Image 1 (tube, rainbow, N blue to C red):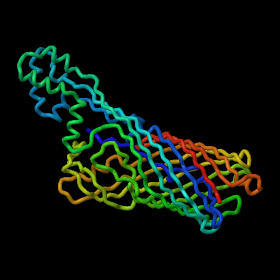
Image 2: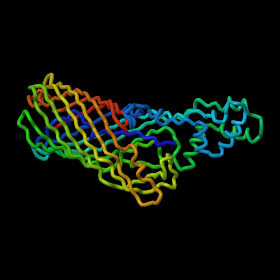
Image 3: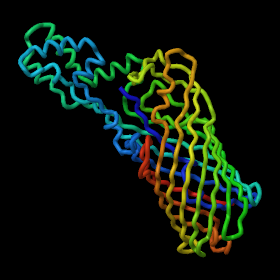
Length: 406
């Protein structure tokens, strides 16, 4: 079997256009905002060789005669008997077809954020995202030749007919039965809402000479979201983590209306403990509940490098584009139980992502300062897509960011 993984990394860690700026709030200015987003495409994944595949294809399993014997050794007796009839080696040709795990995940989020200018150079902010996660899951089976083989070999003996009857139970029923026997929750539709990890952000403007400016950004990710459930193959696994990020934003006004920005961010995963089912061998792809234990974990550190541009068409309207490359080291797990292969939990946890983003903004800040608007505010729409990667879900994100100042 398999471990169904749907990865979603977003919210305040995402590079929104308002954050591609080296600006901070004036002293004692308050700025409440809300980010509303929709993430699709996470039903696809860039595999360890960089190819893009649907999770349905990644997690599909073909049950030919060799696979059946590896799961249930008693099937070898049936295969041996079938191979004795004619020259067709019907036993070796036996297949129950392919079990398809069809999934259609999506994520909506609502993230209220409040920022406050401590001084003219230092701003702090806090965000508490609310996530709505849906996943339509269904099991289908296709490609079985069991009926055709039974027509040729059925009725020869009661034992052979009994074996055929057991196989006719089907892959779907067998899969759910195996999950239940090992203590996993049933594969079924998911529709849940939860509070994700809280983020605290500190922005400090090192210098600003009107044309060139430099800002540092420190982010603390606090594990207020749900931790990965080792008994649930469909839950989101990127929450309940403690990380610290340190980044820098350098902006340069290339032309009076054109700004270019460079962003560099490093993230460190603080070691913690988490419940996991630990495999005992590379073939133990669906560890039994007896393997569940509380293990030490350190989420792999990551480095993000991005560039972007912003052009002002008028005082109120601007648009831009950006490109980001993110690399993440493999996670680390360790524990003390004999026979546990903690290293197997680290397989395919290193990641690479290439993302493009586009956006447009409307703000009334200049109009407010000129006493031409009732209040200063900003509305930003961004679109981003993961166009390449390794061991990471594709993410197509539509986000609306509403910000006020007072």
